[in-house]
Length: 312
Picture 1 (spheres, rainbow, N blue to C red):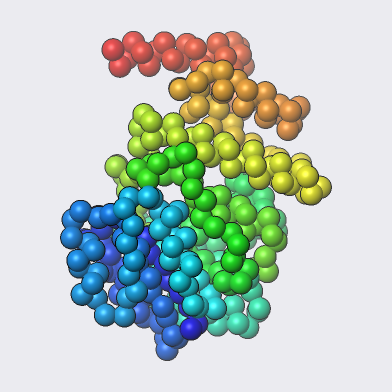
Picture 2 (picture 1 turned 90 degrees about the horizontal axis):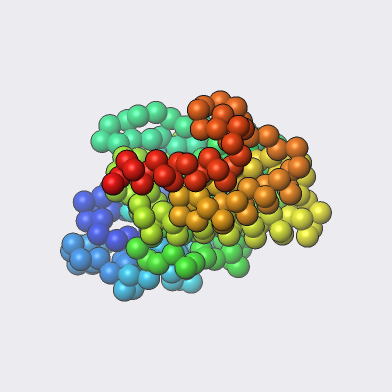
């Protein structure tokens, strides 16, 4: 088997057939398509039983990481691709990535993607970067991991990790996965064209839920970065460049976490200063000017009062 494509799905009866069909455009490769239904209630499970050439499994709302791990345990391909059920593969890209992987003995074949809502929005080209770890920490755009092709033996023991975020909330499993991949310093090959068509959701996507959903996602994001940065420090690979890349993510995260727990946010801000004692809050924007004049904690307390008054 050349390639295994893993598609976790939950209530995606309207989009899943397009995702599956795009995987069959294999250019003569032998492709194993695995769909794991995560307790759908809209007829998705019944529908995928009718599609030929698809291996199906079902679980009861344990979330995407569990679904991906179930599928991975059945993967027979030399290479693996992870695809969301409302995205689809760019035409011809699967064979091109496979050929690159074979020719260059690559552990990961990266690529950019095309962004859609109902219509085409734009193309996000692959950003060339000479530090794959810094890139995935946040230094520059790191594309979308569903645009990548992975050598299975390279990622055999890198699971999609679950978290305290339940099946109803995003747990940043793909971000954690890519950072763990990057820490292993894979051999990279680049497909200089989009390999994925990614559907952009303006509202309602799980990653952007409010209240407890966003709270879980923010804390999970922080826990991932603490873990990855510790691993880099323990192995002597936490360079100034990688610290700067991480802070590009951690500093905005301070503000989001402060909405739920000001003390946790202050601890995060102090950690940033520990990582980089010379860190300076950017001066652009009114809120950043408040940080400079009042300090982080007082500014966030005032913003909390403003949100309370505004939302009644």
